[in-house]
Length: 154
Image 1 (cartoon, rainbow, N blue to C red):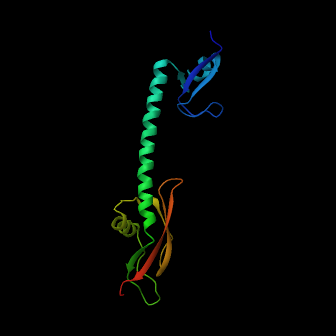
Image 2 (cartoon, rainbow, N blue to C red; image 1 turned 60 degrees about the vertical axis):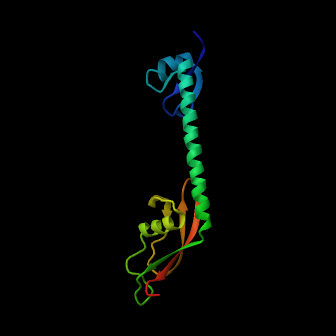
Image 3 (spheres, one colour; image 1 turned 90 degrees about the vertical axis):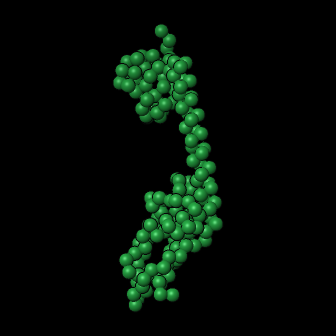
């Protein structure tokens, strides 16, 4: 029997690698531990081909999503600020608060792109003024837009 064999990991293992990575391990480790406990499977020619096909499909999807996020980022960078009108009391305090839906609707009018409220991060707004609106589309893509709150009677 061979000393080292190739396996495809089904689960993340600290010492070996992450899910669906192909690694070489000793045959005893593979047949006595990894395969019986369903941590790995033998890397046959068909399985490696299947694995590579899934990696290519996943990469194409990631590239497509990245392209869409770049287009949305370009549209959002063209916007310098968003204005929202709210009813105001005597001390410039607004009645209620600014909701996610209002901001998403203004962004939809400005860019034509529908964003989720989980992408928006802004402080709890209770007064008239200018605030920073953080839009985080991905881990590495962040856009900051000014959010201006106007009194409704103007």
